[in-house]
Length: 344
Image (cartoon, rainbow, N blue to C red; front, side, top):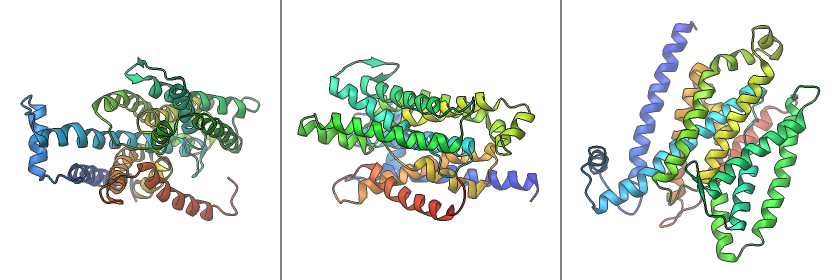
């Protein structure tokens, strides 16, 4: 298949994915006890954009409740999928994921520490809990990277095993802190840790948006280097890529995207594992197309996971992290079965 044909096919797939995201967003906006037509939803959005919003029941439902969680689902999905694509490409490992190297467990610990200390503050658009989650995710990633260095290099297997070990310690400390909380607060914190988009509003969107833009921007800027790294570190070095510096920068970028997502939505696992694989099957390994596909595919999958979380129990809602964990666990077992007998 020629490069021109490949580009045309990838462009068509990206267009279809974009259309599916829009259609899915409209469907999600109509999931709930109040059923609205697409015209009513469009009218509310148009009135707000035109500055002519009216304080009606439909306005409150669409603009204040449903639309923020849809936008947040797209941002979180795009961030986690991009982070997963970066990790898998950096380490040439189908099971590499920001959560495997400790980003999620570090973010969870940071949030629980602040909750235990009852700190109330806001910094860079994030409240104390969200900011601590962001710092915790980045801090643990840096710790795992530092502990994994061997003679100036970071072996893939060492990094992943170190991440699992440090992540286990972080989870143990988090559990210990949770056991000190009163029952009512414990239920709320555990619900957050399992991942949820419920009761999220526009400030949450505003808090995550800059981190998503910066992280995806860096990833797109390094798409050529990611393609070169797929040839192997020695080949990449001979082609002028500063391998170790690029790995550190993109590792931090992936961790930033994952930690910022955890900060506003809790732990939504396996999106970074599933989406890059599916998108690679659709558009191929070229990061010029793979990264945009992950952005759209991550948003699409998380919108539907959120819809499922609201529909599985009639009249209730389960954490979205449960939905993605069930899907992701099966996918993870599939990857393990495929890689049986291979050296990771």
